[in-house]
Length: 94
Image 1: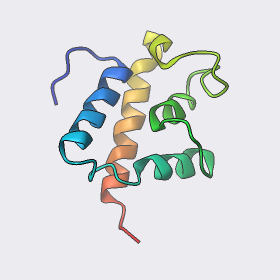
Image 2: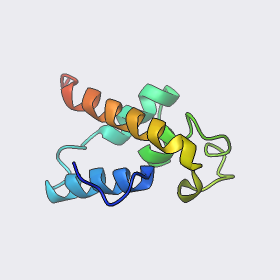
Image 3: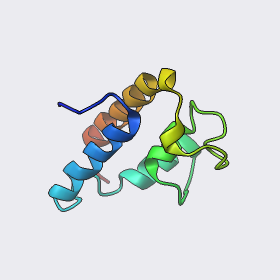
Image 4: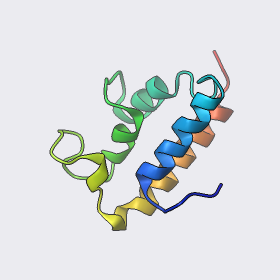
């Protein structure tokens, strides 16, 4: 995939855009799956915030916005997001 920059928010936008272009079918259930996988249950926070909260202090309680993620954490968050997406897409449906 080719992106304009290497920010986590750009990757999130790409993934969401891909899903929207495919009538949201590829990510159907991804929000709930990520929340259950990371938090152990439901959350109304967008999956990107849930993923970011694993490495960014202050993200889970709303003290920092997703646009203010420190640049040194971007690569790790992108890797986690893509790993989770790959796992979700290969996860057998119930």
